[in-house]
Amino acid sequence: MTATAPWIERQSLALLSQQGHAWLLQGPSGLGQYELATSMVSAWLCESATALSDGACGHCGSCHALSVHTHADLMVLMPETILLELGWPLSEKAQSEIDNKTRKPSKEIRIEAMRDAIEFSQRTNARGKGKAVLVYPAERMNHVTANALLKTLEEPPGDVKFVLATEAAHQLLPTIRSRCLIHTMAWPSETEAVQWLETQSLSKDDAIALLKAAGGRPDEVLKQRNLGQSMQWWSKFPKAMLAGDASYCSDLPASEVIDALQKLCHDLLMLQTHATLRYFNEVDLPKLKVSSAQLTAWFKRLSQAAKTSEHPFNAGLMLEALCTEAREVLNSSS
Image 1 (cartoon, helix red, strand yellow):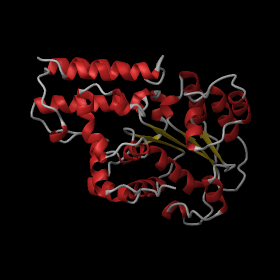
Image 2 (cartoon, rainbow, N blue to C red):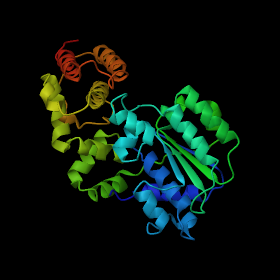
Image 3 (cartoon, one colour):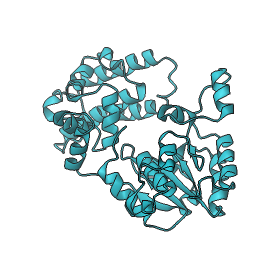
Image 4 (tube, one colour):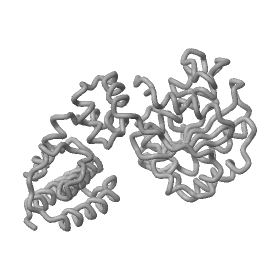
């Protein structure tokens, strides 16, 4: 189990000291919105007398029930794909439909799940500490689902608290944002992030390199590590793309390949303008004759490809096309 990062603990204790019934945690991906939300929920439901000032105890029956994802007073609203990824149970009906292959797991928060949450919020709590609803990623609510939640946020039952975590707050209804206490995620310092990543079985060199590759977002580093990336992998990525080597990233989802290509394109543009590189070390970038206009046009095409990366007609062909285009752009002359 991943230990809670110190900057998440600090934010959790600060938020627990505030009064309110709904919180919105916002910021870029990789800063720990889900971890902060679960930390807050754990403290709200914890049976320790000092939970709201010191955080959840981690030992009581409530903390155990939450750790094994069976707490009767917690409703988790997530896309079914993320529920499965994080080990949360689906409803019996949803699990049966997916097991019987009548449909695939949803990538949105379904209206049926929101109706269950509204019914849950009106029930009496089971353990005497109130109830909690966790919504993540909140931007995955469609318009109908969001409006259903809005009605409950406007007139919440007395003993239920809501925490919404999002990586795209601008996609939420303004009326939902206005009914929540808004917290913008804090960025850890590089030193603190590297020290924590070393406790997660990364070498210091890998932690430093991947933290830069992740734009300073520690959760993104763990995601990259789990996908097989390392300092060596990242440093060789630009030259692999110069050669159009699709096999170099064949184990990655298309969305991750596009993200890496966008970072490469960004730093190549920074190199041309003698600006500070964000993701790569200068020694790892090839010397190119490609123009800024060509790189900018490529970045726009990558951004367009990112919109459909989760639904490729053929993932293998998409990867080949991405790497072929990278080779053609990187080897072109201005």
